[in-house]
Image 1 (cartoon, rainbow, N blue to C red):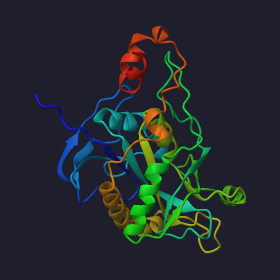
Image 2: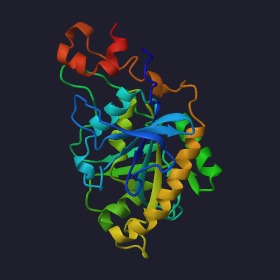
Image 3: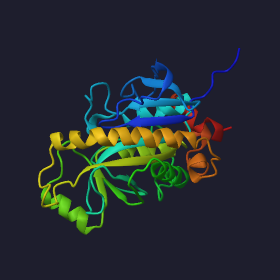
Image 4: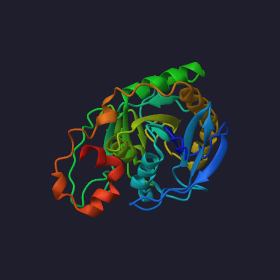
Amino acid sequence: MVAEEKVRIGIIGGSGLYDMDELVQREEREVLTPFGSPSSPYVVGRLHGERVAFLARHGAGHHILPSELNFRANIFGMKTLGVEWIISASAVGSLQERYKPTDIVIPDQFFDRTRGRIGTFFGNGVVAHVSLARPFCSTLNKLASSASTDVGATVHNGGTYVCMEGPQFSTLAESQLYRSWNMDIIGMTNLQEAKLAREAEICFSTLALVTDYDCWHPEHDQVTVELIIDTLQSNSAMAQRIISELVKKLPVDRGCECATALATAIITRPEAIPQKTLANLAPLIESYLK
């Protein structure tokens, strides 16, 4: 029997990006995980000849709040499909004048303002500490930047993504404080994805799609869903073009730190790991316990 071809590229679509129009030979794939169900079935198909899995982060019809997202199931499902690269698209607010609505930012850092979200696969008898000094894959970020330039997007490389809890938008005091800290963009979703992707040894990059100036800007003192949706329509089309171009540049050699993040991270002695935990986390840790 011929082994099924791995799905090596994952795409997570955020607000406004609920599908990839160019995806062909598509099928819906339900994936069971030890952490529950992902946001929706993965849409598996081909894009420029590469096997790709697309996931609508907020589910069909956008019915899941950022705080309700099952980040562990979403990323673990990608891992079990064989994914090695995740391109995550996310709507964000701009905290700096230079990032204008419809611009693309490819951040290289995070600042955590979430509360109580689960951002690790570990626990239940196994302890691991991965490095998150550089939370995004530098190789994938460079490819994302190149793809953005190739399709004519206005792209900014680097910057810090403030991940807030939501679902409310920032207060004016919060927005002004983040600006005083030289933060760059603000959103509600990507931090836990990046943490879990690193633990799963998956390269991760974010296309941050600027929709508004948060509430600090004198001409944008109130962020509204209506304002965001108007910009999202333009951003969604551009994001699809960038992702399509980026897929053409993959696969590449995975000589980055992402590919071996767990090599020196697991502290628990193999014989001390409970069998149930070992079985649940086998796709992540089994190769390091032999």
